[in-house]
Length: 153
Image 1 (cartoon, rainbow, N blue to C red):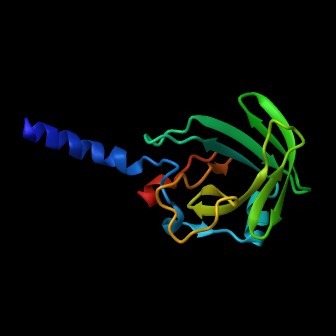
Image 2: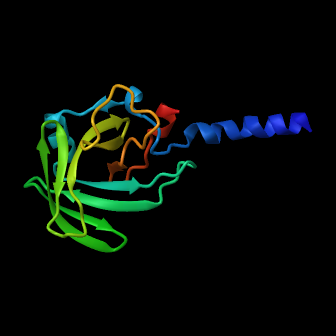
Image 3: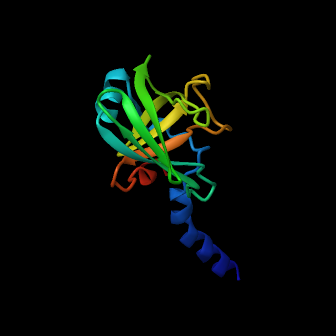
Protein backbone atom coordinates (compact mmCIF):
# COMPACT_ATOMS: atom_id res chain seq x y z
CA UNK A 1 0.00 0.00 0.00
CA UNK A 2 2.80 2.42 0.94
CA UNK A 3 4.65 1.64 -2.32
CA UNK A 4 1.49 2.29 -4.35
CA UNK A 5 0.94 5.64 -2.62
CA UNK A 6 4.58 6.60 -3.12
CA UNK A 7 4.42 5.61 -6.80
CA UNK A 8 1.24 7.69 -7.26
CA UNK A 9 2.93 10.70 -5.65
CA UNK A 10 6.00 10.35 -7.86
CA UNK A 11 3.84 10.09 -10.98
CA UNK A 12 1.89 13.19 -9.97
CA UNK A 13 4.98 15.32 -9.29
CA UNK A 14 5.52 16.41 -12.94
CA UNK A 15 1.90 17.53 -13.17
CA UNK A 16 2.18 19.44 -9.92
CA UNK A 17 5.45 21.01 -10.97
CA UNK A 18 3.94 22.61 -14.06
CA UNK A 19 0.73 23.84 -12.41
CA UNK A 20 0.87 27.60 -12.29
CA UNK A 21 -1.56 29.68 -10.30
CA UNK A 22 -1.72 33.42 -9.87
CA UNK A 23 -0.09 33.09 -6.47
CA UNK A 24 3.08 31.85 -8.21
CA UNK A 25 5.66 34.63 -8.08
CA UNK A 26 7.20 34.35 -11.54
CA UNK A 27 9.55 37.31 -11.09
CA UNK A 28 12.66 35.29 -10.08
CA UNK A 29 12.43 33.58 -13.48
CA UNK A 30 11.43 36.64 -15.52
CA UNK A 31 12.70 39.80 -17.15
CA UNK A 32 10.77 42.96 -16.37
CA UNK A 33 10.13 44.96 -19.55
CA UNK A 34 10.92 48.67 -19.62
CA UNK A 35 8.85 51.20 -21.56
CA UNK A 36 10.70 50.81 -24.86
CA UNK A 37 10.51 47.02 -24.66
CA UNK A 38 6.77 47.21 -23.92
CA UNK A 39 6.24 49.40 -27.01
CA UNK A 40 8.23 46.98 -29.16
CA UNK A 41 6.47 43.85 -27.87
CA UNK A 42 2.90 45.14 -27.89
CA UNK A 43 2.76 47.41 -30.95
CA UNK A 44 0.86 45.83 -33.83
CA UNK A 45 0.37 42.46 -32.14
CA UNK A 46 -2.59 40.40 -31.01
CA UNK A 47 -2.29 38.70 -27.64
CA UNK A 48 -4.15 35.62 -26.43
CA UNK A 49 -4.57 36.05 -22.70
CA UNK A 50 -6.00 34.30 -19.68
CA UNK A 51 -7.21 35.21 -16.19
CA UNK A 52 -8.26 33.39 -13.05
CA UNK A 53 -5.71 30.60 -12.91
CA UNK A 54 -6.79 28.10 -10.28
CA UNK A 55 -4.49 26.10 -8.06
CA UNK A 56 -4.63 23.38 -10.73
CA UNK A 57 -2.88 25.74 -13.16
CA UNK A 58 -5.87 26.03 -15.50
CA UNK A 59 -7.27 29.41 -16.54
CA UNK A 60 -10.99 30.09 -16.20
CA UNK A 61 -11.30 33.19 -18.43
CA UNK A 62 -9.75 34.00 -21.79
CA UNK A 63 -9.39 37.12 -23.91
CA UNK A 64 -7.95 38.36 -27.19
CA UNK A 65 -6.44 41.82 -27.32
CA UNK A 66 -5.33 43.44 -30.58
CA UNK A 67 -2.84 46.30 -30.04
CA UNK A 68 -2.50 48.68 -32.97
CA UNK A 69 0.57 50.90 -33.54
CA UNK A 70 -1.60 54.05 -33.19
CA UNK A 71 -2.43 53.18 -29.56
CA UNK A 72 -5.93 51.85 -30.17
CA UNK A 73 -6.93 48.33 -29.26
CA UNK A 74 -9.76 45.87 -29.48
CA UNK A 75 -10.46 43.66 -26.47
CA UNK A 76 -12.63 40.55 -26.80
CA UNK A 77 -13.81 38.24 -24.03
CA UNK A 78 -16.69 35.75 -24.24
CA UNK A 79 -17.90 37.27 -27.51
CA UNK A 80 -18.04 40.81 -26.07
CA UNK A 81 -15.84 43.17 -28.11
CA UNK A 82 -14.73 46.50 -26.64
CA UNK A 83 -12.60 49.29 -28.14
CA UNK A 84 -9.91 50.90 -26.06
CA UNK A 85 -6.50 52.54 -25.95
CA UNK A 86 -3.10 51.30 -24.85
CA UNK A 87 -0.02 53.32 -23.93
CA UNK A 88 3.16 53.17 -21.88
CA UNK A 89 3.60 55.23 -18.71
CA UNK A 90 6.61 54.97 -16.40
CA UNK A 91 7.58 51.50 -17.64
CA UNK A 92 4.05 50.16 -17.31
CA UNK A 93 1.54 49.06 -19.95
CA UNK A 94 -1.70 51.01 -19.51
CA UNK A 95 -5.22 50.49 -20.84
CA UNK A 96 -8.23 52.81 -21.06
CA UNK A 97 -11.72 51.83 -22.18
CA UNK A 98 -14.73 54.08 -22.88
CA UNK A 99 -17.10 51.43 -21.52
CA UNK A 100 -18.01 51.66 -17.84
CA UNK A 101 -18.05 47.84 -17.75
CA UNK A 102 -14.32 47.70 -18.50
CA UNK A 103 -11.77 48.82 -15.97
CA UNK A 104 -8.46 49.98 -17.31
CA UNK A 105 -5.24 50.41 -15.44
CA UNK A 106 -1.50 50.09 -15.70
CA UNK A 107 0.59 46.95 -15.31
CA UNK A 108 4.22 46.04 -14.82
CA UNK A 109 5.05 43.50 -17.53
CA UNK A 110 7.34 40.52 -16.96
CA UNK A 111 8.42 38.02 -19.59
CA UNK A 112 9.27 34.34 -19.17
CA UNK A 113 10.09 32.71 -22.51
CA UNK A 114 7.11 33.62 -24.74
CA UNK A 115 4.74 34.50 -21.85
CA UNK A 116 3.94 37.99 -20.62
CA UNK A 117 2.67 38.45 -17.06
CA UNK A 118 0.83 41.55 -15.87
CA UNK A 119 1.22 42.86 -12.31
CA UNK A 120 -1.09 45.75 -11.41
CA UNK A 121 0.70 48.97 -10.58
CA UNK A 122 -1.99 49.53 -7.92
CA UNK A 123 -0.16 46.92 -5.90
CA UNK A 124 3.05 48.42 -4.59
CA UNK A 125 6.16 46.76 -5.97
CA UNK A 126 7.67 44.73 -3.15
CA UNK A 127 10.84 42.70 -2.94
CA UNK A 128 8.82 39.73 -1.69
CA UNK A 129 5.23 39.52 -2.92
CA UNK A 130 4.54 36.06 -1.55
CA UNK A 131 1.19 35.10 -0.01
CA UNK A 132 -0.85 37.27 -2.35
CA UNK A 133 -2.23 37.02 -5.86
CA UNK A 134 0.63 38.28 -7.94
CA UNK A 135 -0.12 38.70 -11.60
CA UNK A 136 -3.56 39.49 -12.90
CA UNK A 137 -3.22 37.95 -16.37
CA UNK A 138 -0.86 36.05 -18.63
CA UNK A 139 -0.67 36.41 -22.42
CA UNK A 140 1.20 35.08 -25.44
CA UNK A 141 1.26 36.27 -29.02
CA UNK A 142 -1.73 34.99 -30.96
CA UNK A 143 -1.37 31.37 -31.97
CA UNK A 144 1.60 30.57 -29.70
CA UNK A 145 1.19 27.95 -26.99
CA UNK A 146 2.66 29.18 -23.69
CA UNK A 147 6.05 27.58 -23.10
CA UNK A 148 6.82 29.35 -19.84
CA UNK A 149 5.47 26.97 -17.20
CA UNK A 150 8.38 24.54 -17.32
CA UNK A 151 10.82 27.41 -16.85
CA UNK A 152 9.12 28.41 -13.61
CA UNK A 153 8.47 25.01 -12.08
